[in-house]
Length: 87
Image 1 (cartoon, rainbow, N blue to C red):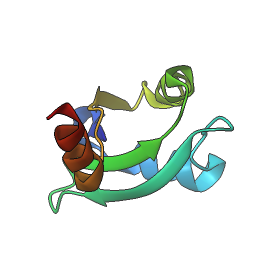
Image 2 (cartoon, helix red, strand yellow):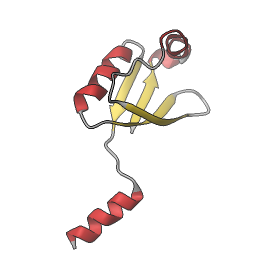
Image 3 (cartoon, rainbow, N blue to C red):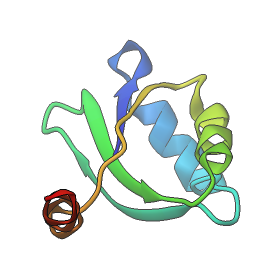
């Protein structure tokens, strides 16, 4: 899960770049879905990749406009299976 905070509370530059250039994602990084807070302060994006450097490359493409927090997550079903496997 990627949590984005728009620099200076300004989402417009992010939306403008996305409209002009797309998501700027390297091959192998998969966008799943995103949600934006009602006040436009943060965006929550679910991304998937097998190589962390792909995510880091994507973040570098946007780091002038956005501050990022990255939280590794799994589905609830995956978490339940891990707990069961651990005993």
